[in-house]
Image 1 (cartoon, rainbow, N blue to C red):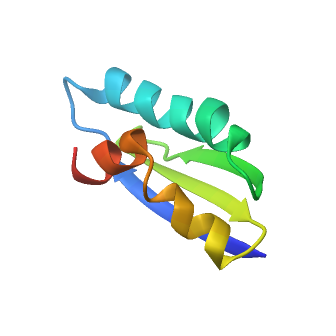
Image 2 (image 1 turned 90 degrees about the vertical axis):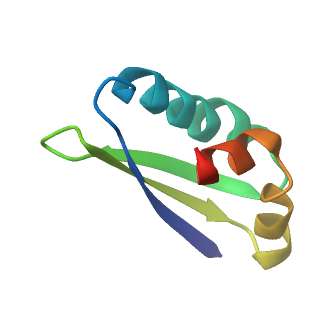
Length: 77
């Protein structure tokens, strides 16, 4: 099993829309991907960061995730 952990900053003014994009990716899109085992989102107390944790069957399945457009957008956006 491979675990991906990524912390996203939630900018004020865009916090709700950014969190919704992240929530959608980790709860609606990733579970449909081959090799996905589980995902969790952890929002910090100040609601300025969210840490996403996803478990995958193996490295090959995780690498395929990087080709998803929504995942690419979140990495830069």
